[in-house]
Length: 221
Length: 248
Ligand code: HEM
Ligand code: FES
Image 1 (cartoon, rainbow over the protein chains, first blue to last red):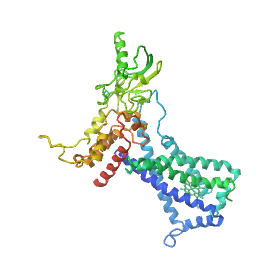
Image 2: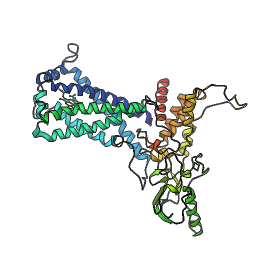
Image 3: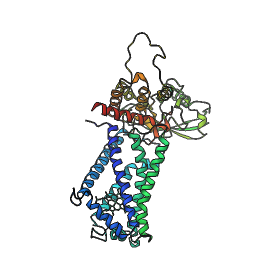
Image 4: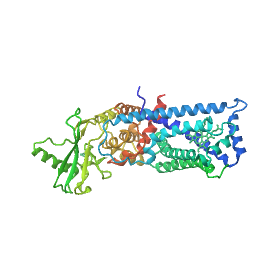
């Protein structure tokens, strides 16, 4: 059966909301790096002990990974179904078509989303599995981050900066759109909600950004 | 004024169609856009050529029949104005004007600039109504309606169903139209009994017709000749969520 477009949007909104909540907590956790090596490594170690003694080591982390994977898959699956439908909905293109006037963020959701996915893959190979990171010892989180974004590896920082800016755009339209999809928005609240979406995305994107930039420019490490 | 027109000509639903150039002199700035096309059509007819087919009826901005994409914008450059109410003074002498039909799978071209908007009728049939017994008309104000609700419902009810929202939407979505009807009826006491089945039925039909989903880009509101706000779509979404809960 053809799934209702509005239902697919609700799946996108809910899974996206979960991912934003994760991003916010992840961003706050990253800021521990400014406290020092010991605090950051201790934090990384603590992440593996969440739920002890009820849950054995790393169980919580694996549960979170499973939940996030489900959210990412649901998000991308519904986006893909809707994108295919949208393409089919206009089989003949306009000969004369000015640029879509909506915000840059709204226009780049699809390609932006794909780039964010590529970033997530790189990021897991980088700071989780350490496949592409100079520090392979996974107990050494601080060293991994500081060596990753060392000035000589400026291109890694540049890629992270680009990805964070894109995520900022993705969140700005995504957050507002999710509120609209869940029916929270209305004529009176629209401006305030758009402003709130902007603030949250700047905080998340900016909070992430200062870590690699801080390392590259010598404020950390 | 003199104009260079490029108009989509398509002989029938199966024809491939293409943009055809026409030069038109002696256009008065006081003409409406459709009157300008009337002048062209008179000339084409006198020359023994097939006139350009385009939709129109009231020419007063209230019926929703006129439907031209002018230089890439449905209903042209003037905000909150239908094609029939658009005047040539908003164009400059010597300008090239591209004229195309609404582009959507759900709105197939019948001929030239005329598209079949029956998909909108079927969305209405799927729930865009209230069931009321016929017979003697009830007293006008027998059922009180709070003023803010009446105002918001009226704003939504000004939708003339022209389809410009679909034509402008990068996803070819008909959500603004559907949402205008949901808002209009859902705010009225008379609209309550069928509120859940209305939103489920209309959204289902909307999707069945091959319209795309909404991404809240807002292109629709920007071109809507009646300024139906994007908030209407949020209301549709809220009703949809409520109806899903109620039906599960
Ligand atoms: C500059 C920005 C970022 C930095 C410095 C950073 C840093 C890190 C670090 C150090 C870890 C490993 C934690 C550990 O296992 O000890 C991690 C995990 C993770 N990050 Fe980021 N992160 C950033 C941005 C992001 C963004 C924007 C996303 C999502 C779009 C993201 C998604 C993830 C995920 C999903 C994991 C967990 C992988 C796992 O379960 O092992 N990160 N990040
Ligand atoms: S012809 Fe009726 S609205 Fe334009």
